[in-house]
Length: 173
Image (cartoon, rainbow, N blue to C red; front, side, top):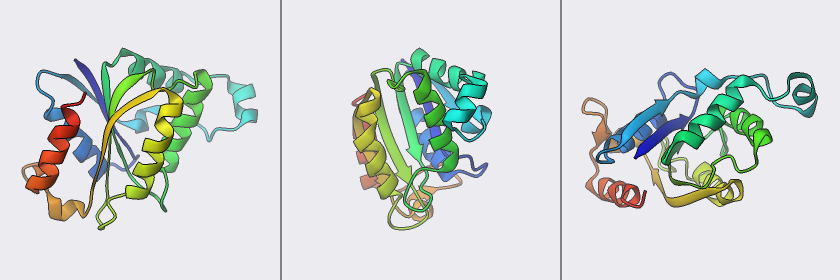
């Protein structure tokens, strides 16, 4: 299985990237590719820019990466209850190539934050809208209080209940 994983965050210290990377490592036998959405940075989307630029190479490459994958893990950072601007912009540009951005790929959606909410607002929005963009969402999981539940030294969940939930979710891919 070719597994694509990434954080919907542009932070160089992204806890969501740590979570996505860890989750991907739990999928036995998977050929894992971890993307950094900073590699796909583009001007802020608008119809005017689209008329001027067409479909940027970064959006085309991102769409191709999704197409090459057998399954996808995304971990969402939450900015003011919603998507990060970096992810939303990448998604907007990519959706102009094809509204079926996720190309019917099986997906596990994750989210985490330092606080007890675990970025659950953005996770709910993502899980609710993803099927409209041809995502086969198999499961979603919020990890609250990241620094309490994730061992930074070992780079793994330390909470057994969350660990079991994550493994169950990944087994659906």
